[in-house]
Length: 180
Image 1 (cartoon, rainbow, N blue to C red):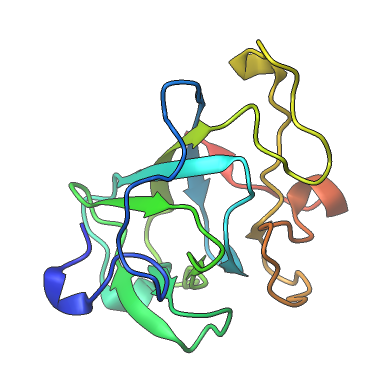
Image 2 (cartoon, rainbow, N blue to C red):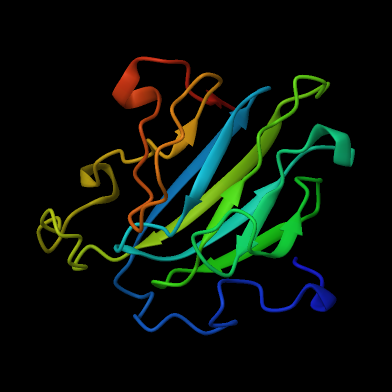
């Protein structure tokens, strides 16, 4: 969890319960490994994500390895409100809003292990994502893969977006995070 002294656990708005009911949500889960050079630019999650829970599985993670989750107060990567290292036993709950900016700093080439994370997203199948929502009654397998926010070494930074989409492995044919 984000330590209390770090301030609010999400963007400038502070903590809040999800505004949408979780009962109708689909659940997306993915286990990922981020190797040296991988990072995620400042973004808010896509509109259909109601809440995301992250769990970390690294037995150790010295600060020099970087690769930390940053909770931001704005799209600026320097507007850091809290920072969480991916150590086993750590978990973060992100409630999606227009102000829930976050990023991951680049994993250092000196990292002796990959950054290992389990993400569980509660996805509202009726949310207006701007590109059309899945039909009522959609199943988890019907939700399209949209994980192009992960950056790899040499990727163009681009500018922060509110939908979390960045050029990434799916768009450029570059390496992606390894499934765990």
